[in-house]
Image: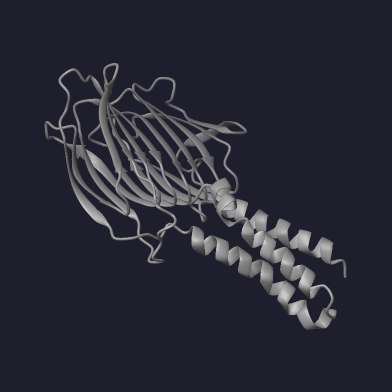
Length: 295
């Protein structure tokens, strides 16, 4: 047996699985940071291959079957976003007098998010339960008030008890709204029916999401980039819908929902051109299930 080829093959297998897990959101960590932190595992691996290279094949055949799985499992395990004590924060963010629009920006690890409208005069109210101290900013960009939450995880201080961020946000319903979400594996319920939604941009790992749109904006743009996903999007029947998708293996109900294929990657409702309210959806997903419900 050529142990050089065997070692290289096992290494390629392990790296392939790690990169795939990262793309699907199973490994929720920057892949290059992961490699930079744990490259000594490769030295150990090749050292073992040299030590065992002189033994007879039958005595370590099972070892070579197990070792790549053990390496992959170890890397995934240490990369899971498991962290320390959680903290709950009450939210009360005043609306700026000069603000004519609002934008919510969220960057976090694994996240359970509930977002809906509020009649409160403040821009944002609600609660956040976090697994690390978030950096919160509230500022003006032009005429847009931006509420930004950035949460990072101290990967070196793990207690191997998996937790998640939980945000329950209520947003002022008077201002036109954009929402940007960058997270790991997540569970979303975005009830936008009472909000003047202009845009939603989601970039996440493996995700289960429900998005309920209303008819308070003439044009709503939804962009979703995610790993293995299950999304349900509810849209008023009066809204015209256009969908562009380059997703991988997916299960959808576009045809039965009255959203007909126009080209290989585009779908559109019959009323899209004449509709007073339009919804444009752009999908970039891994293995996924997408359901559109028109109500």
